[in-house]
Image (cartoon, rainbow, N blue to C red; front, side):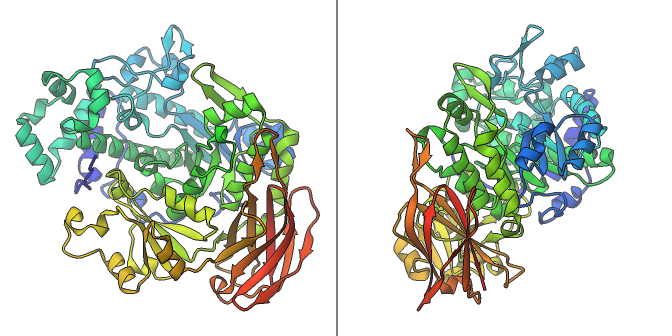
Length: 625
């Protein structure tokens, strides 16, 4: 479905919406006229509050295992106790966060208010929506409802929870399922509660888009003071089943999603500011958002880092491709990721006991410059079993994280060596176009070093693509269905400046033209003797004399035996021109459960070559001068 970029600004109508909500008995958050500092370009968070490449992140709090794994960050569900935080700091945990759930706190809301049904999301039939993956949860005779983040009653509960959490003086706040009401629009057909209807009415009244004004006129909507979107649809004979199947074809569907997304993003951003006011200082702020869609990315400018579930395709029994896309996109957003796998993934691991596959996930995350949360306790889910848990055996994983801590100097401060850039465009993705995930996976398979550059929009504010930002790349890769490449579809008289510049300089690759890419960036990395090795070169941009680090991650996983097939006698070769002025002369191999091993280095014409005697699942080659 084509989604046009709206000229509408959330700051125009949201203060009015909040006042409307407050008038219904809720609390209106304080919203600045310009949205505060969060409206500015989303530069990276302060180093002391964000993740380091070598951090070991826990999802669930377990002080008894801090030292065993080398835990440095409590990223998700820290215990709500000030003494627990102090004890964690004493054991080397530098960031301690506590979580608030936007969908999972069924018990809390029901106990908090007798009017809990006023806090729920409602579908077109006027029935409360429940959380699908919590079908096996009941409390006081009620299912776990999907709570509405536009509801004054639910906001009152969230204020109560935030006060509880901040009283423990945590270093950070985590929000589970941050999209709130907006998350059920495209999935479960919500929300048509009175608060959402009032907010959407106000949104439409403040729309300055000629397209939306014409749509309203064509639909005969003239009485905005009493307009109710749910009633409007029902009056046209729309039934719930039809709405769920054909929501995008419904009148005002685009505007309704736009309203819900912007309302939720602004609410969560202010929730963070409220937390910092209560804490009395800046805090680390992270959410469970898997980065897989524009809806999941909207909060990125307001985050310190992502702390989230990411699908790892466990049942395929191989090095997964989707996390590569997530990690690269996060680089473009300048936000680290502390990831875990999905509930389905952990259910598979729990049933089949494939610890070797999980170790591969851990290696992939750190090789990409991010952090996979220690799997000592993970949520599992299947439709048959519902919620259950995987308590990963310490002996299978703790030593991998100890290796991470031991090699911190080869991780911290390192960025991807990237002569190529892949363009992510949020407005295009909202149109269902220009998907770069297959590009990221393919480039990784080809061992072509790259990064992602991000073009934002009115959902993803602050990320603006310019010719200057692309100037340092030897090639810029754009999907062939990107709107900027189609002048008629884009309605433009001339291409954007960034595109015109790249085209003029002959640096544009329209994917999937791999031959054009080869001409601009002749095979920069080779692995002789194996086709099962992923190579990720990383450098310290601020320190030219620092070692170049090559992460070697094996693809040779064998699911039946849950083992890696050792890769022996392979040679890694890098083209010297991708290293700039760096000319390494020494190499050391670092691998888990192994002593460092000196390797020979040879330079032949345009290449630097390093023989690697053996690779299990992960190793680092330290190249230094």
